[in-house]
Amino acid sequence: MLQLRLVVPQARREAVEAFLVGDPRVTNVVVLDGAARDPVGDAVFCDVAREGTSEVLARLRDLGLDDADGGTVAIAPVTASLSRAARDAERAAPGSPDDGVVWDLVTDAAYAETRPSWTYYAFLTLATLIAAIAVVLDSPILVVGAMVVGPEFGLVSATAVGLVLRDGRLVGGAARLLLVGFVAAIAITTLLALLASAAGWVDAASLTRSRPQTGFIWTPDRWSFVVALLAGTAGTLSLTAGRSNALVGVFISVTTVPAAGNLALALALWVPHEMGGAAAQLAVNVAGMVLAGVITLLVQRVVWRRLTAPRAPVRAPGIR
Image (cartoon, rainbow, N blue to C red; front, side, top):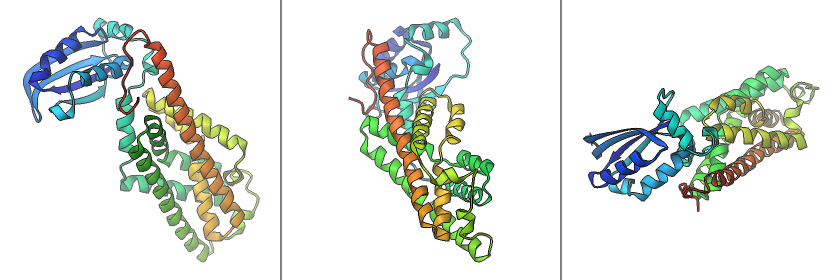
């Protein structure tokens, strides 16, 4: 279940209340007359079956509940709803909660990822540094650590969402931040690798020697793209279904950050053949995950439309 917290202009309150009370997918409707102060209006709370939320939100927009009229909508997960009414609302909604994509949540989360922050740059740089050390030590444990620390999947998924919604601003913002983040992380790691080389800690042999545990980082093959597709699919499903615990498995499946670390070392120690391989590995992983995200979202749209065919179609923001 998801909880909707609404501020409804008084002129819209009657229609909104009638709709929410009459929809079997909605329960626990609470109306507080004139309780909202900023913006001014009536406060309305209700719980909605997750798989019916997109349709409910679309209907609320049809009723005029939008920013232009002073109305607001906030969405929060309901950890547990111990009532028969909640179970009835779940049964009234088609399909499974995990299959229902709440496009408003997906879009909002995607835009949130495109806002640059120093923590994003810090985590990506730290992950790239860990990856570079993993290459020097030929340590698969450190490779996994770098994968987990890296924050790049949120921007990869945001790019896929923007492509599906045909939202150029979202695609541009996500792709730009992803590119700038990796350029900054690689540049900082390269600089520190140059300092380490000057201090005698590393040299070209650190890369060119046999690295049975980490050599795959700069040698992409067909399996690299397959893994990126699978990881991108799993990651997109985990985000749309609200199962963020599955993302850890995605993080340790692809070699985006490790490839960036290897590329930084190759630049600092000037090993040209590994520069190209690491750059290709990075590009293959990002492209594969974006492609998988787009395909997954499109399939979810088709499947969900078939499940809800007897009902009015969902009108997700930006989707025609």
